[in-house]
Length: 278
Image 1 (cartoon, one colour):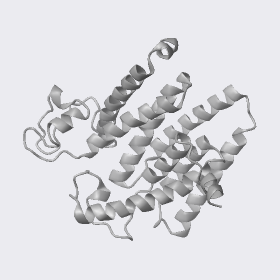
Image 2 (spheres, helix red, strand yellow):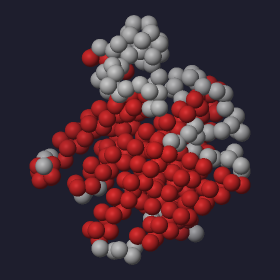
Image 3 (cartoon, one colour):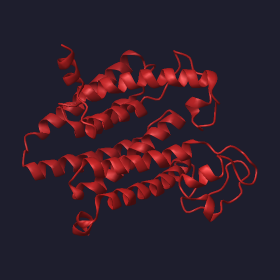
Image 4 (cartoon, one colour):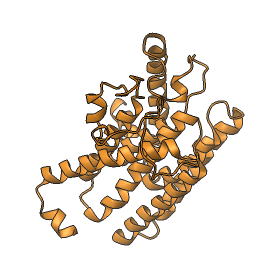
């Protein structure tokens, strides 16, 4: 199987992986919506407003949403655009994985990792909470990833720096949570930082933290402007359904995850930027 993938043309592999990511993104939308609701994942999809079951041609990732112009075929209710963005984001992340990592054996693990990060981000945006089950599963993926790297490189002592990075990240975010009495960020963000920092190691933990705050500040300003001039509520997130102010609570997990991805897959090094500036 692995040998067959290696022999395939790169553009064909990229196309298949992207389409696969769109399909997985569609499933993630269902999973996020039904998580902890008691609803089975096997149930048929339906309009959230009129409960009309969706037909097969309404279930194609991206294209169905665009074809329906973001509205239900039966009642014309708005379909939250987050369904479109989750599918597209998952497809892009899957494509990014196969472009960055040449080790085909890592692909299944990393694709599951990307899907997990999408679920955590969207769930935090929708509910302002990161379930412990997500963090535990992410931690298992991190252990497998780092363990594989240790096995390949035979650098068994190097894992100490991964542990140090995880501890530093946790203490930093836990300290902010404790000092602010949970007003600046939640304790779930501190727990989430552990597996993320563990994967990028001591050399990337500062960049991840710095980027998460910079991106958080930038996106928060965008959200404030969107709330003022945009169409509120269309995304279907809790944070989008209320008017935000500069003091409003904003879910931090998506920012932390974006910072992680920029370091983990983009190779961004903030300290290198500072060295160039000096």
